[in-house]
Image (cartoon, rainbow, N blue to C red; front, side, top):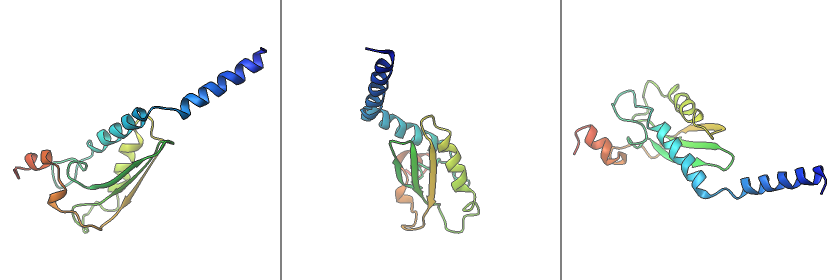
Length: 126
């Protein structure tokens, strides 16, 4: 076997290993993204946006692209123009994320029922 054959075989093995990544890698990336979302706090409430229930949809692709559909507590929120960029920056800083995209949606409207139990406890609602 020549050096070229050996290098080609090594490259194929590496590509195959990447293609057969265990799902746990994607699960770990998803958990790291959620961890990053938990570092971003709503400007009006002392609760992170994930536990507050502002994240409606989170999709992490194999290519490291994260698509987020989120809302704010009120349509007239003064940070509506800048907040999605803050969320994108937090998620883009996660190792393994190649791109973060945030779409701000208003339907369905946010309600307190979307909050996690931890958020309700933190706000004294339990």
